[in-house]
Length: 159
Image 1 (cartoon, one colour):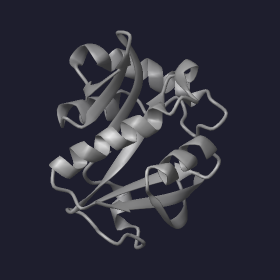
Image 2 (spheres, rainbow, N blue to C red; image 1 turned 180 degrees about the vertical axis):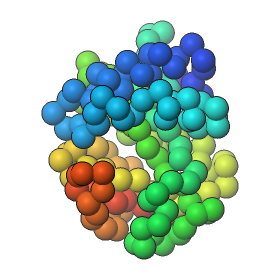
Image 3 (cartoon, rainbow, N blue to C red; image 1 turned 90 degrees about the vertical axis):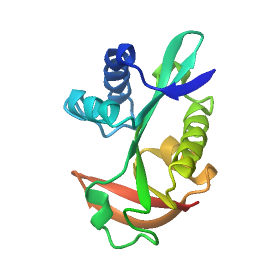
C-alpha cells in the first residue's frame, strides 16, 4: 500500500473513482460533483493524494486550503490556520477495510507538515461510514448545517 501525491496519469482514474463512489448508498455526490474542475484545481495546487494498492488506485483525498465552509461560525481555528479535508473516496470493492481512515491519518501528517493548526470537514449525516471514520480519526463534531441540498455534520480536529 502506498499513499502519495496524485500524478497526471492518475486524474482520469480519480474521476472514474468519484463516479463509482457517487453511486453508493451513502453518497450525496452527483454527476457534476466532484468532477474535472475539482480534480484539476486540486492537482494544480498540489492538494490531491491517492492510495495505491497492487498498482491500482483504490482511494483519493484532497486538501482544501480555503472554501465556503470557512465562513461557518462553529470553528475553533479559522483560515489561514485551518484547512479542510474533502473528496474522500475509496473504491467500492475496497470499502469496509479502513482505507479511508488510513488516508485521513496520512493526510493529517501532510497537513501538520504544511503548518496548519486545525482541520475541518463536512460529512453528510446519511454517510454513516464517513462519520464513523472521522470520529475514529479524532475529529470532534462541532455543528450541523444544511448545505448543498443536504444535512451535514461539521467536524474539526485541532492538531
